[in-house]
Amino acid sequence: MDIRFEKREHLKEKPDQKNLGFGKYMTDYMFVMDWDREKEWHDARIVPHEPMLLDPACVALHYAQETFEGMKAYRTKEGKIQLFRPEMNAKRMIKSNERLCMPPVPVDMFVEAVEELVKVEKDWVPSEPETSLYIRPFMFATESSLGVHMASSYKFVVICTPVGAYYAEGVNPVRILVEDELVRAVKGGTGFTKCGGNYAASILGQVKAEKQGCTQVLWLDGVERKYVEEVGTMNIMFKIAGEIYTAPIEGTVLPGVTRDSIIHILKDWGYKVNETRLSVDDLMKAGHDGTLEEAFGTGTAAVISPVGEFVYKDDKVTVNDFKTGELTQKLYDYLTGIQWGSVEDKYHWTAEVC
Image (spheres, rainbow, N blue to C red):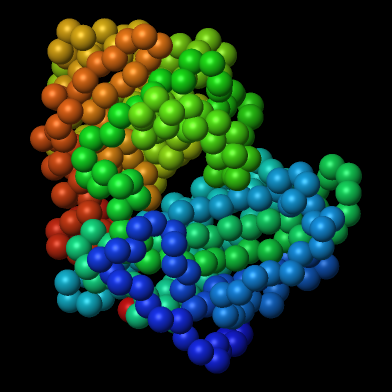
């Protein structure tokens, strides 16, 4: 892929790596590529990160033809920079685009765009412990017209931001509200895609959770409001009586890259992983009778986030005395060890960029 480079006149001052937060500071450059029916993908370029000019009739602003991904670049202790399973993000975006009637970004183009931008922005990849460069590929319809239809033009963009921990709690337990009124997804919908509309519709649940002192929402299935599915920004897993339970990928749950990685690791460690429907009643019962030993969310942003308490209607259960579980911590240390290069990557998941 021929990528044009436009140099920035003045580079930004880099933030304090010890106080990065999440998503606050954008790097100097972004990758941009255009698609239309005549030329398909063309004009790949790395240009200064700056505001984009959009027509007020831009289709994405009205009908939400938009998808995105989330991934990270990690600096190893030797100073090398590597990605984690980038092809999985590329393939997932193709599935998301297919559902929203958007053209696919071929896997090789997606990965090359990310790699080339990271090479340009290598000085932005932080070296402090628990930090990384968060990468946000996204795509949206650019055609200017009103009326619901498949747009005739699109932009694929990649931006980056150096980040610390996603949650202020870090790798410490969070309190989760089980949402039993609002729903996130139903089969046949867009629940398995990574599109902005899914997240916009989840904000009300997030606001409700925060008002009750909770960090996140646990969504139930959209039909019976009975079976646990996923947390607002993460897939979720439960260790009950020594076995692992997590919602199956059946069209309503995001097929997480971290989820898939953790399942591989757990099976290699000898755990039985049940990808099956778990009712909220059985979850709360396990919490009360002591068989719910650990619970944790999995996702690129937070990696692994232990759950210390579930709040459901007038009931509450505390998990592992509101402490990070032994398995949760072991998984976090092992997976981040692979990502940061301190643990052997026997799965060949990492890809060195520079």
